[in-house]
Length: 261
Ligand SMILES: C[S@@+](CC[C@H](N)C(=O)[O-])C[C@H]1O[C@@H](n2cnc3c(N)ncnc32)[C@H](O)[C@@H]1O
Image 1 (cartoon, rainbow, N blue to C red):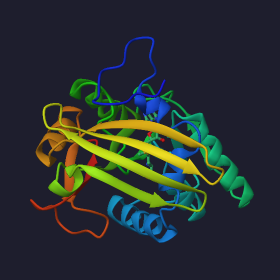
Image 2: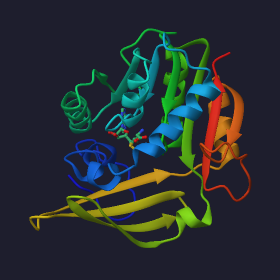
Image 3: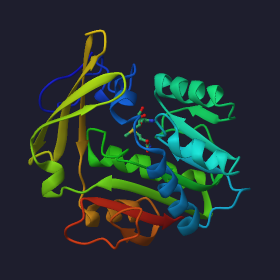
């Protein structure tokens, strides 16, 4: 069921927004136009700053349509796996890769309960605002604990998330046109729950529309690094993005590099 309005924890028989929002093709319509150059830049940065090697086992957690998994795999990081809970996202990723004649390793799993052994991976990624989804900070922390569990000692971790910067929490409407659809988003910020709530209406070329809803809790950089430390990570660097600029009071994004000691 699609939810509307301010975020309420889901009733036990109701699907949460982080399932319904990634069903169908609306997310791909809204964000699928990430240009290849952006993903290439992200991967250049991650390879260099995390010291990735082609033999490394790399997990792209919450991969969506697997743009980073694909780019890493193309570059020879052949033990990269994209993990996501949305079958539609994984199907889209697999179909795009197959059409391009590329091999792709994908895993359908919940990032809170990965079917992987302790210490399985050399690196784990949680990119592009794939955090703050759950009802409570304690549940969000479980995601970081699980990422920590599946990394070997010395394994590297990178995540990037919005900060509660005035530009991010500015309320209002935003719209984007992609190849096949027009997407309109109504953004509201709830300063009490500190959730960024977005209602997205996607109108396709044939006139059909689809509405979905997301609600992401935004953490300050101090809160986020505190959670990473509580999950067992050591922080290596905090930046404002993939161009390597340092984090400042004016950063609207927070890119954290960490490792499992
Ligand atoms: C913002 S998108 C990810 C964007 C992607 N990392 C990128 O850089 O393009 C968030 C993704 O998290 C997935 N997701 C949400 N909750 C999840 C969970 N508990 N386990 C696994 N995937 C989850 C959604 O299906 C969605 O594809």
